Structure formats: structure tokens, C-alpha cells
Length: 260
Image (cartoon, rainbow, N blue to C red; front, side, top):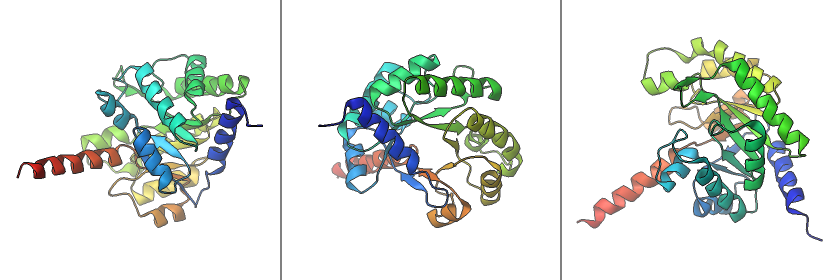
């Protein structure tokens, strides 16, 4: 007898969680539609991760929760139904949903995991870490009460603003605040933390040595090689929007070549 959809989803949650091994990172090339998700699976990757930037662009919107939540989640649901492996969904900052509402939406989507970030896109600033930890705790509680073993990857955005601004600050000086947030989120029940755009080796080494759980790193051009990330103890590597951006750039090059 075939397993029920609920049992199948729980099995995918358990598989995703089991693949987080510090020193042997789970590689997550991010997909933005069913075709790219199937390409990820065909290439031998055991999990599909979505990119909110790529999904939003495909739907005709900017990133950072400018796309309607129902459209973003519907696109994620099509991806999850289109492959036979766990799918972890970039759910941005939760689209303003209450914890139980967000958990129900992710479960309906078929998400084995999700990314949740600590940026308040309405305010244009980072959320208060204690309030955000309480929100994450409520999400874990809502999922647990429904028997949903959702894998939560909490994104820590401390490094993102300075990185995008191109400032001269070293990442090392931002590590204490990133650790404070990451460990609070882990204490709240998340499975993994994601200090997005943390790439400087010394800062990354310190972060990994002092954080209390698995770490996700994004694969920037300047990020250390995969072998070095593994040696540092990284548990998960994702590509964020970069494969989508590269695909669009290649498409534009092809279009230019068609004009002679």
C-alpha cells in the first residue's frame, strides 16, 4: 500500500534533516521552477531548494516579499509536486503570516523545509532578535502540534546590509551579533542557521566554532572552495539567486547573438 501524502511529506522532512552533516555539506543548487528543479534532481542532487529571487522574477516581481505570498507558495507547491525528493522553500520573512498560518501554508505546499530570514522588509531593517526567536519558536510549536517535522533554516542577515553596501568593515566585527542571533534561533528550535554572505575565512571559522548547530553558507564567487568549507565544518551550501542570474545572463547573450 502506498504511503499517505502526509507520511510521504514527513519522510521527506526526515531525509532532509538527516543530510545535514558538518564537514560533509549538503549541496543545494537553487531552482526557480519545475524544469530547473527536475534538472537539479537529474544531476544527482538529493534535495531541491528554491530561490525566492528566482521564483519572484519568474512571476514578474522583485524579491524581498514584493510578490504576493499566494503566488510564491503556489509556485513552490508546483515545484514540490514536480519532483520526488525533499524540497526546501525560501519563504523569505514569512510574508507577514501568523506562525500557525505559515506552517499550514508550507505543509499544504509540500515543503520538507524552509528558509526564514530575520529582515523586516517593511521597515527595511533587521528584526529584534528576541522577538524573532519567539516567532520561530511559535512556528516550531505549531508544526510540532500538527506532527509536521518541518526543517527550519533560520537566515541571519547581519552581514547582508554591509555586503550590499560595499562597506570597508570586516566581517569579523559582525560575528558577535550574528552569533547572538543564530544561537537564539537555535534555542528556539530551528535546525540550521544561515549567515548569508558570510564568506571571510576567519570570520566564518569563528562563527562555526561558536554556534550551537549546523551552518548553511551561500556560494558567492569569493567564498572559499567547497573542500575548504567542508574542512571548516559547514553543513549546507546553497547558491541563492546566482544560478538564476547566470541563466538569465546566458539567455541575454544568446539573444544578442541572434541579432547578428
